[in-house]
Amino acid sequence: MGRQRKSLGNRIDNVAKWLLKFRIISSPARYISNSKITWSLISRTDRIRTRRLEGRIKNGEMPNHISIIMDGNRRFAWSQSLEREIGHLKGKDKLKQVMEWVLNLKIKYLTVYALSTENMTGRDSGELESLYDLYQIGLNEIAEDPLIHSKKVKVQAVGRLEELPERVRVAIKNAEDRTEGYSNFIFTVCLAYGGREEIVDAVKEVAIDHAAGRLPLDEINSEQISNRLYSAEIPDPDLVIRTSGEERISNFLLWQIAYSELYFTDVHWPSFSRNDLYEAIESYQYRRRKYGK
Ligand code: FPP
Image (cartoon, rainbow, N blue to C red):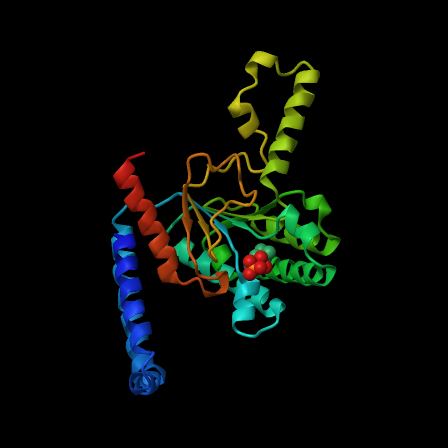
């Protein structure tokens, strides 16, 4: 259904692009598209669409665990001629909004990929330092957020946290300590995280237990690995969303996504809207109905 709507949208776009080649059409088109009336019509239509989508997805099977690869902060910034730091800042604010939407849908688990092990070696120190500042600020904001406390959200960070600067680790501890008594919802931030590294760490623990005589060879199975992952108590994600057009997993939750539905959207993370979230969930529900897992 989503694909049908997309191809109709593409055809309309193509006709519009072709018509806009003619000056006699492009001048009034520009005037109309910039007018207040058009924008109020668009935002009204958008609100109606959001309500309809919300009604539809609430009638279906909701995912229990959504995880997100928040990609495209810098491309968003470049597309708007903004500094890359502003792109990341808008990304942080978007995360808080998305948390609210997910909580309102009563989805228990939300996990986000905020910094990969590759990011830590592949970005210049100026960008990394400003990202660390952002995690510090963002985690402290989350720790104080009234919504987190009213909905009783447990906040936790996973990854090779020992590789993060002290100020980020202090902010993680603050958010975890302030929410440790909660269990209605679980929000997990993956920082200094790599899926392969997580599997390697779990395998090392298995090896240690085997060498110590606690785990015989014939008892080593996938459950033993799952039990030793960073967030062993969290169920595998039902739906993984990646923004900004790349269609790959980039070392995110490699073990856990064996059976997850994957959803890719072209939208840059700071522009991710409530409609985009609902469309991802609708696509998940459609695939579940169709392939009935
Ligand atoms: C990927 O976009 C995004 C990041 C590496 C950082 C994401 C961080 C946030 C959204 C803030 C999170 C805040 C807290 C508190 C956890 P990119 O920089 O790779 O952009 P690009 O794909 O356009 O290059």
